[in-house]
Image 1 (cartoon, rainbow, N blue to C red):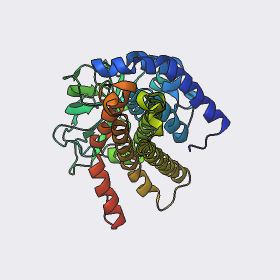
Image 2 (cartoon, rainbow, N blue to C red; image 1 turned 180 degrees about the vertical axis):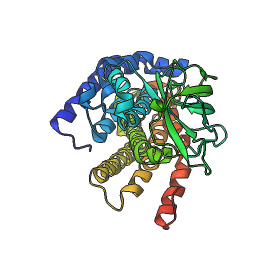
Image 3 (cartoon, rainbow, N blue to C red; image 1 turned 135 degrees about the vertical axis):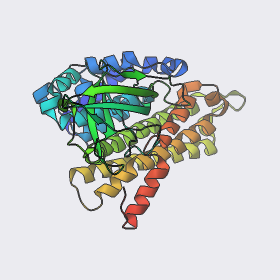
Length: 384
């Protein structure tokens, strides 16, 4: 369980009511049309939830990662595409919060529901090695830099108002000497160059983007030159890992509830019984419940460790996404098997959950990369 206090629980409860009314009704269309969930994001913004983690001094709700996780879980139960867009926004906000002297206006806009952020780290030349951009900033005579880059799989590409962008510093001598910049959608030279019609999370507009000599002043640098990796690992990675785990737990919970609904509501008329009377199906549901609860318990332990850091904290953060994502894959597979032809035919949105659950496996850091990082940490080797 998330173990929320009264104030945190109120936020999550309100988010659930909002998601039932203004997010879930659009989920099937978002998936079928591979449409960006604009109405759903607008609803989150209108409720102040784009400012969930923005400090109160900038008009936000000022909540922590525990509330963030519970809210993402709640949204993911209704629409995983919306939840992923929301997660990437919150990761961008986490970067803005580290440099409020430069991003105060953006933080206020996010708190007011008028700024959607996202990350633009991965590049075509380094693929899922998000920590190692290929692009390199060029110094300009005006004192700032020009950034040219080919970014891949940018969530909310062409839809976001702000992009948190990584690039090698002008004098970098290693692949990890990057700098993180704030790029705005109105900056000349930034273009979304493709569309996204993926297998799962089809509404998150995860398309390539090109930055062509985008001019950025020092006021857009969110890190010191060459210190981008510190932000990636110290700010973004914990938020993304925990948030991805929460989205996965939400998907698993939705699959459990949908499966129970189908099994208890479908009858075998010739036997005058329901599918719930079949012990094999009850056993499948039990396995789904156990996997979901185990993933949630692990996520709770990660949050506990982040709030009281210790020697195991880094390891638990590295585990978070892989543990929950793989659990969601198992649970949604069991849901498809348990609900049979009805699920394959689209009943209860189960096949959408099945597809959505698989998307984070290949989102950087991929599950296989996470396993390697965990193994390296356990063997006393450098992780990055």
